[in-house]
Image 1 (cartoon, helix red, strand yellow):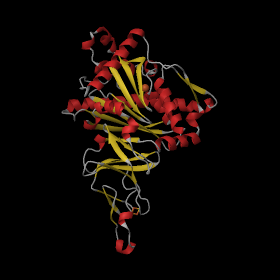
Image 2 (cartoon, protein in one colour):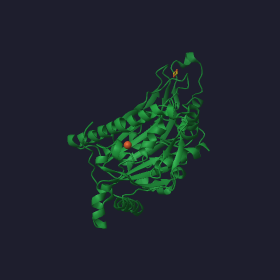
Image 3 (cartoon, rainbow, N blue to C red):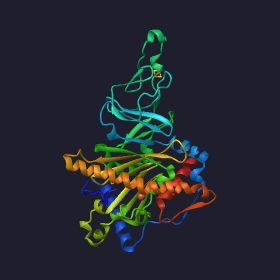
Image 4 (cartoon, rainbow, N blue to C red):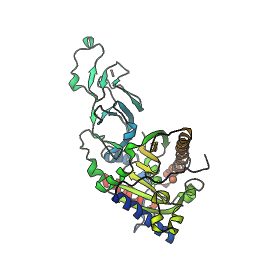
Length: 397
Ligand code: FES
Ligand SMILES: [Fe+2]
């Protein structure tokens, strides 16, 4: 792993007074925390039965009540930049293709041929004019309509209008693509995200970013993984030579909107901000804001030049997860030097998260069985972890 930390350029413009005020308010809260050596706290600790992490039946119930029910973030708009762009992804056991139509809108379909279920396209992104099943070559247009049946005169008649790919509700907001795995659901993203969070997310301007890279991280249980994204209590110990070089530990401002949340961590530059006159403070240099959209999307560095977006999804068994880690840039690298800087950030995030966070997560998982009768304790200084588990409990009813 490299020893240096990524350097961010500051100066991303705040798109409205609301957004600007929010950023400066968060910075002011962190300056106060820096002076008092404190952090945002909730009134009580939270006790979480360890069994809730590893009971396979509960895990299955959670997938049903959470991932297969709520609008699920599955892609970035900038992964689907043009007509014909597609992304195929396995979403908790449902193979999905998201495509950009000629009119700019999105479609989502089940990646399974209506003849006998062939997978139309392997996981990944690309550009195409149609999907042709590799099994017997039925073909579908970008919207999923069946357009061609090979050897139809021998196959017998096929009602093409009724044999399109199964569609799923899909929509995008603030550069993020959401799909409902419930085919009958109404996807109301404005209500799901709410106006205030939508404005803050919109200000990150992810929709106009350049998509630099995708890395896949195989991880342990999804909740073990997610817990680690939602607190900065572990920075000084787990990330002593990496994240802790730029961030202070156990110092954060916490905000939530419905099940979603933001943990804004104090960067080391908060020390200078605390000394500087208010008009000279710049939140983009001293606040590390990580937005978290329930149930599994982290946006880090959204006020900066390089943005790291992580999609965490449960794997095929309770003890596995899969994370897509994306690096977005404000513009395509103009030269080799900019490309190298972006590659460095990509590798740095990948290595730190995999070696340190997910390494710790796999180790936690090895101890779960022996702890099955116990409870974990989430501290008053871990509001994000508490909020996440509360949101799951609410979703489970
Ligand atoms: S399964 Fe797709 S054409 Fe047969
Ligand atoms: Fe971490």
